[in-house]
Image 1 (tube, rainbow, N blue to C red):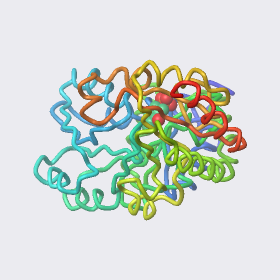
Image 2: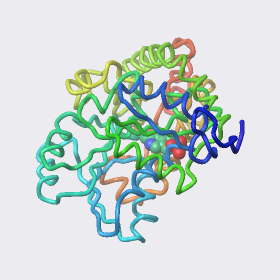
Image 3: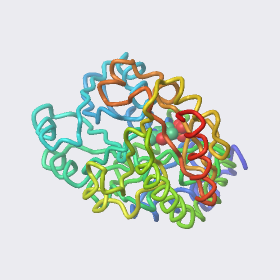
Length: 353
Ligand SMILES: *Cc1c(COP(=O)(O)O)cnc(C)c1O
C-alpha cells in the first residue's frame, strides 16, 4: 500500500500509477490463467475497455458484435465517437458477416462471448483467423466465461479483456479489469494507457483480486453445475418462453460452445411470458437471488436487463437485438442448488400462477 517507491529499488517500481507489487501479483496470476505472456490490470472492466479503445485514432473504425456489453456500447457511442472513432455493429454469430472484416478493414474487431445478456456464443477461432489474414487485432471480452473456461488468446485473439469485478475476483468486494496478450507491443500500449490515462487500480483492490482468483477453479465448477441444473429446470417449466444457457443442447451455438468453452459458466437467461412489470416483480420477490446489477460473485443475483444493465441502450436497438421485456438474467451463485430452484419455482408460481 504505497503511492511511491524509493528511487533505485531492485524491482524498478517508481510510482503506483505505473506499477505496484500487488498489480504484478494479479497480472501474473491472470496471465497464467489466460495462458498469455502478459497481462495489465486496471481499476475496472470499463477502465480496461478505455485502455484498449484509447490506442485508436480519429477516423479509425471498430467492427463490433452488435450485442456488446452496455457500457462498451455507451463508451464507443457517447465518448470515443466525439473524437472521431467510427463503429459498425454486426451480428458476428453469423459467419456470413465475417466477410465485412475484409471489406471494411477496421482498426479493431471487438467481440464478447458469451454475450451480455443474450449469451450468444461467437466463434473466436473463426473470426480471429479472418482478422489475422488482414493483420487486424481482435479483442475478446472474456468476462462471462472467465479464463477458467475459455482462453481467447489461445483461440487466436490478440487481446483477452475481463472485468475482474466478476468471476475472477468473485466476491463482489471490489472492481477491477485486466487485458491479457502475448504481443509485447500491445503490452506496452496497455502499460502506457494505465499510466497516461490514470486507469490503475488501488493496490488493495489488486490484492483482493489476487485473493479472490485463488478459488476461481472451485467456484467456476460450482457455478457451472448450478447454472446447468437451473437452466434444465427452467426449460421444463411452463410460463417460461425461452431459456438460454451455452451448455443446453437447445442453445443455437451449443456445438461451438462445447468446442470453445470447458463449461457453460454461471449465467442463465430466460424470457418470462409476461410484461416487463411482472418480470421485475418476479425478480424483486426472489429470496436467494438479490435484485442487483453485476454478476459472477458467490451470491446469486438476478437482473432485468431492459430496465437495468441495458437501460442505456435505446429501446429500438434492444428489441432489434432480442432483449424482450420479459427477459431476466440469473447470475447463479454457489449456494445449494436445491434452495435456488425451489426459490425460483415458488416465486414463479406466485407471480405467474
Ligand atoms: C461488468 C462488465 C464490464 C465492465 O466491468 P466493470 O468492472 O463493471 O467496469 C465489461 N464487460 C462485461 C461483459 C461485463 O460484464
